[in-house]
Image 1 (cartoon, rainbow, N blue to C red):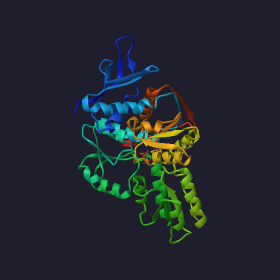
Image 2: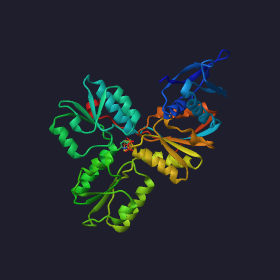
Image 3: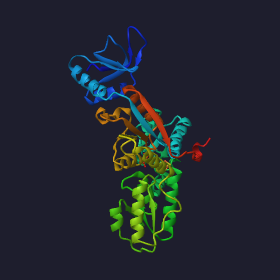
Image 4: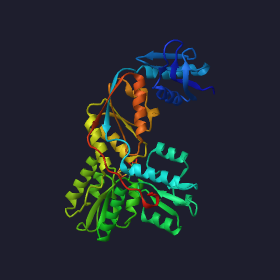
Amino acid sequence: MTPVLVATTLVRPAGPPVPCPAAPLLAAELRRHGLDVEQRALSTGETTAHTVFGGVGLGLRADGEHERAARSALGAWLAVTGPRRVELAAPRSFCAGVERAVEVVEKALSRTSQPVYVRKQIVHNTHVVADLEARGAVFVDELDGVPDDATVVFSAHGVSPAVRGVAAERELDVIDATCPLVAKVHTEARRFAGRGDTVLLIGHADHEEVEGTLGEAPDQTILVQSAAEAALVEVEDPTRLSYLMQTTLSVEEAGEIVDVLKARFPALRGPGSDDICYATTNRQNALRAIADRADLVLVVGSENSSNSQRLVELARRAGRQAHLIDDVGALRPGWLVGVGVIGLTAGASAPPRLVEEVLAALGGLGPVNAAEHEVARETIQFTLPSPVRR
Ligand code: 2E7
Ligand code: F3S
């Protein structure tokens, strides 16, 4: 199939070339139409259709059978051009635990020519995983995908003692990228179970972090996923009871669950300090601060990212139209109809450059007035695990 060409720049016979920052939006829309797409500079003479407005342009070349679909995609984006405000939530994107986990894999790759295996996605982001894969990391679902004598990195979400046991038995070279704030929850799980408590773990089933924490004391831990479950959960001895949480929950929902549990079990004891981490809390507060002003909220993050999903839910609970986008290519023209103010944020596993790319592409649809609203300054940094600390 001859690819449809999308202009990244329009080269005119007279006058300077016109940048086309919205090219990735147009390219993605064409791919959704099932077309093969290439992005490159085009001269205006080459294009099938192009427009120049306010110092930017949009244009493409499509031959024969593709012309109709191409014109329709171009028309869809041209229909939503115009000036916009973007309210940027801060903090957003990478947290200290993600920075550390990514650096662990990078350092592990740089100290050996052998493959570096990573158990599960190092963090729940397709771009982070693809970037590290391109640099030689091999992602596996379980340790049986790791050959003997190999190096394996445990993901930021943590692992159960059973997984640690298998790795130790096989004498694998383990580098643990578990976020220190998750490790803290594991320590509490051991302490609470060790004093004979039943542990109510507030979190979502089938999430890797929850699987890991549950694994600390599987016979003494009960997963509580909602206020409805909290209202029904039965425990053997309500006087020996404590609770813990997944680090990426909605602060609001988790608080409601704890309230239900405390009302039912007055002797319930909690963690020394909040399990929902600083980064989760800050990203939720930052989004809350801008959501009211936005017609549409965009959260950059991957589908399986719990903290990113919680941000989308928060915006929707505030009555906003909200979407989770893996990258700029996931933006749909229909979402922007009648939208003058966009709230923009990113989950803790989404690289900052993805937000920059969204902003740049929006600038290709008309002038963008972007303002950042910072609700907290994050300075926390975690030291690297000893095998990669040099
Ligand atoms: C580790 C932990 O990778 P993420 O998207 O993970 P979630 O848990 O939100 O799906 O985000 C970073 C991160 C958050 N929590 C990593 Cl335990
Ligand atoms: Fe750790 Fe929280 Fe990030 S648990 S990995 S600091 S989202």
